[in-house]
Image (cartoon, rainbow, N blue to C red; front, side, top):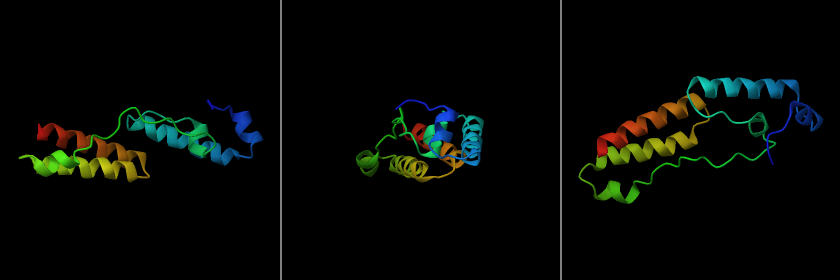
Length: 105
């Protein structure tokens, strides 16, 4: 299912308040440099597309590596980014994870 128009969302029972909250979320996503999700996804009507960049699984490597502390930190930060409800905090966690990954190489 592709993007939905505002008219379609209202016809399905979503209020203007729901749509305005989704627009505010999109603005927050833009501010932190994250790809914005469609309003249909944010109100829960449309399934989100799979993210193109998946967290790197460092689990095995982190336990065996000489630089294991940085790898473990990167793994923990990636996992926490996935759990964050705030897009700003998730973006910060991903940036921190990227730095830890760079330090581990």
